Length: 371
Image (cartoon, rainbow, N blue to C red; front, top):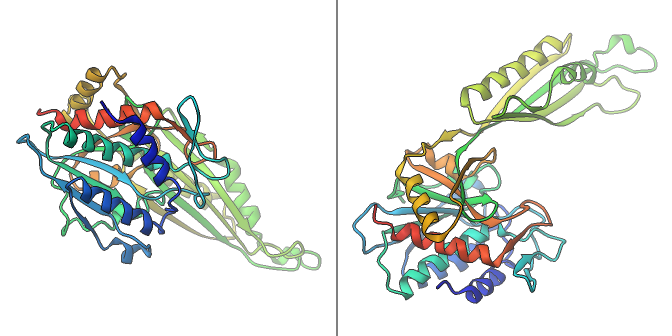
């Protein structure tokens, strides 16, 4: 049996550790110690210097008793804001919330404690398990900057089979598909002029931008893609014809090629409406989509574990990204598994103690499966 009280205690002890993106030093030190206590060989890479953070990514390896490819458990050490001064409030019904003025940090501490307790259970009960790699990335919440800077040469992943515990919802579901995410930026430059004395000599960049934005249709583009206009900024004063205007947004799609078709449409819309203003259009590819087939061993193992534990085993997709998108480009195959975090990225975030237990049970079952 998973030790429920111990899980709640450990979760409650980890939550107050400040661990914003780029500021994960204390959390990293604590987790390295805990992993070593469980018998893992643990190393930290040099990503901190590459990304301007206080801590790198954690790599941990534990040999197994089952002669099979290692399982890679993937999570992250950072939390979104407001993240300083967090504390866990454990309610009588088992719900765990923040105090209401910060996030809880269950994204991704739910995963962390489930990894620790799942392995701890196997070790204490002397249950045979596969070799296991645990990787906890820094700066995941800023488009996976830690994973992009991970030292794949010095710390090889050792496994092509990945379970990334970074999905909201009750334990027992997993996403097989995740999107390409692209940020876009349209910068328009017109010509400044006095709006009261000689407006006809100016070129209003805001007007050009507005003409383009009016023709865009943010929201769903089919059932697998979203487009958003996120920010608009420009001008300098009410009595000056606006010389500059910058519009930014994003596209997310489960279809990589479609995402770029939408980007091309956005670029063309700004080009056609720029008028006399100059246009600079830039894109940044944050993540690349992947799609794992249902008959892949990673999925079949997840389904077997859920069946044994009486979990739903629901297979779904997500339009949220994770570090799994990034390491998939290295040839791994993984799915994003729900770890019981709810209403993430808000001060209303919570988890349930029962879901923490189920998550640890799921970790243990995945590691015990010899196939």
